[in-house]
Amino acid sequence: MNALPLLLIGLAMFAGGYVLYSKFLGDRVYKLDASFKTPAHELQDGVDYVPTNKFVLWGHHFTSVAGAAPIVGPAVAVIWGWLPAFLWVTFGTVFFAGMHDLGALWASVRNKGRSVGTLSGRYIGRRGANLFLVVIFLLLLMVIAAFAVVIKELLISTPSVVIPAWGAVAVALLVGQAVYRYKMNLGLVTVVGVAALYGLILLGDAVPVELPDPFLGMSPATFWIVALFVYAGIASLLPVWLLLQPRDYINGVQLFVGLGILFVAVLLSAPAIVAPAINDAVPAGTPDLMPLLFVTIACGAISGFHGMVSSGTSSKQLDKETDARFVGYFGAVGEGMLALGAVIATVAGYRTLADWEAVYSAFGEAGVAAFVEGGGAIVNSGLGLPTSLSSTVLATMAVLFAATTMDTGVRLLRFVVQEAGDVAKLKINNAVATLIVLAAGMGLTFSQGAEGAGGLRIWPLFGTSNQLLAALTLSIIVVMLIRKRRNPAPALVPLVLVFAMSFWAALAQLGDLYDERDWLLLAIDVIIIVAAVWVAFEAVVAMRRASKEPPEAPDADVTEKAELKG
Image 1 (tube, rainbow, N blue to C red):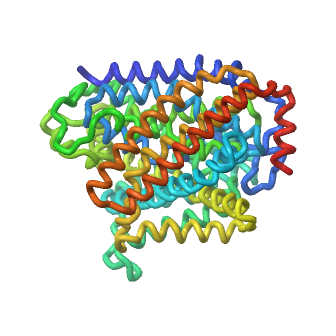
Image 2: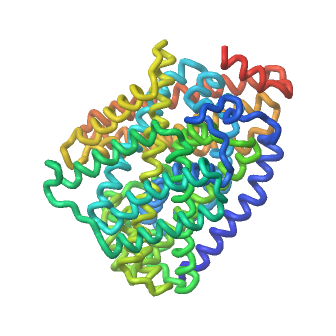
Image 3: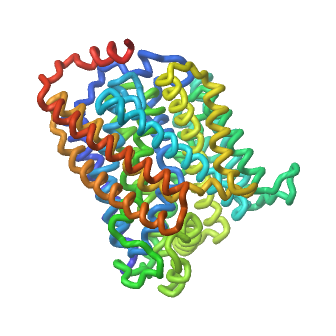
């Protein structure tokens, strides 16, 4: 069998999901209203609350939620075979991720752009919300620390990506000035910006940059990590229109072009799938497919981090509520397409089954490198691009995805720190909150040495905590729908499955961590499990209470705004 049917079926499902299911959600479930005054207009401040063209905002949202996770997750999960990964990516994107991301965006827009952490206090209960705020903090900390390490590894292992990775910052600044200050045509700016990025990729492939050891008194690994955190801190303080929006938008377009290159190569070469559909001979030590599949592939199917982005930055920039369908649901579709590309690249990018088994000799070892290697081989075969250039294109995609997620993660974590300060009756300004975030992120990253090994210290808990956060977001959406007397089933069914699988995984992981005597991760896992049980109980109570209360009046959102303000 070749990979062409997987590509065509996957793309057809994504298209059908956006055209049909997202329209149903927007019209019948969330009832998006173009006349509703969004927080971007009501609270416009030129820094975080900025009304934004839906195409530009989609670029920000898509690249922020995507990161490296929809590449890493599927690239690891195909060790169980390509069929489970393919099914979870496609059905998960259409019926889980799109609904979740659109719902989180809608819920936040209807509540002054507040985050899911704050919304959980309003709709689920303050007791569980305070505990879950700790989980949200840990989740975002995992993201920024781990992605700093992932980017550092790619900058060192693939020196041809150094110039395009950092050059993209300069391109983004110019795009922001052109669009917002000089009001230039968005289409023209897009073409020029994408052409500049690909020019940087060609330059990077011709002039790879390898830092000497030591460099400025640091190893290359240490220098890149410090540089990434400093950059992310500065970026998180700048107005979103100056760097965050244009960087994410132009990266999003460039990354879609990169995916297009990979998909066209698949169409032209129809590479054979060498991996088994169901792998009955997994390496020793590989955990069971159930429930690990559902937490190994999070981004690319459904991810709690998406709810943080939807409610943390995207909701503050939504121009019209009806734009949420394009930004939220289609943003999830974009990530699903990336995950589909990762599945295809890692199961059809190798010549023989033996070559594939050599890469997948142990669980968790394959990741971005397998995607770059397999995808580069497919592009080389289908389009005739030199292998080094093909690898540079895909590695640049991975770096830019990870970097935009790290940017957004630092900004989101700054919001969480400030919200925690509000709970403690402390007013924390942007600069102080950002310094706290950078100190925590770099402290974790360098906790096990100057090479940044600590950045992945608590990453094994990302999958379970991320999916439990998705369940929390879904429970908020369900309560809101019940209060408005709308059909909660599109959110309730995914809620039950995601919670069951992620809680099962957390319990299984608890036993493994105890056997390994990893007391730090064991303690964090216990906190996550306690928070999950607590919030689940509170959510059930909130749902029962909402079903017995009188239905909300059509103008209930006005009342909600007044309550939140008070």
